Length: 310
Image 1 (cartoon, one colour):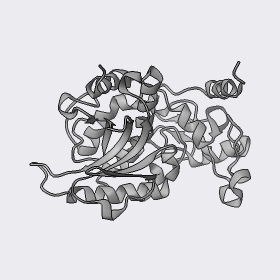
Image 2 (cartoon, helix red, strand yellow):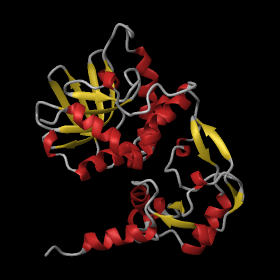
Image 3 (tube, rainbow, N blue to C red):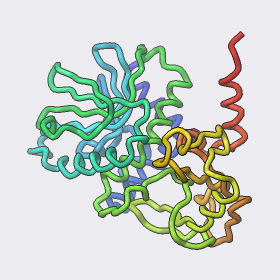
């Protein structure tokens, strides 16, 4: 019989191909510790009968999986607002909830396909993801943001586990922002790892610290890329201007074909050779895997999905 411990351990095993493989080192940097308390996402102490949260996550916005009485498997992030011997009140969560609300207000697209779930005792409520209602920030409330699968644990497939870890990867920016002690003036700093932004002209690879290492991007290189390729997605052709009108004019992500996390020295970036405009959806799918999918692979996925079933 498959239980939550089996699921958590399987997620730990499969994390090697995802960004979550480095999650405990991300925590180490944010918490300014010398070494991570655990190498794995979930540890024995953070796995229980019906749920598990990431090792060290009891007083954080926690990566959480669980299986409820209604037969649904959940995976995402959560605030577990319960008092323990080591935490006599929930005030520690208040600035974290505030930061979560800041993030979701400015980045609603980060939560596509997810739900906001409040649970107090046996009462629960599902909503579209939005700012957390402050009246719910009280002792005993469980606040969850993520996805649900209407499956028994024994029915989870390899594709389901990849979906869990892919969703965990997508939520890394949320975790980083909520748990960071530093003030971040521009939440857009917390973006997909290969999106191009910044101010350094044509010279890329400088490392800067925003709780975790990020790489400075060239704004002029971005502009040259868009001037050459336009603002339509180079994978699916999506145009924000066509769909949203003037408010979407000029908006597009810019993807770096060469992963800057593999670059240690400053190098000259060629905006035509090295960059491509892509929509946020295609950009997110590119980074569902480590190393990222190529643009050609994503185009193949779209082509295969468009073929009629036999």
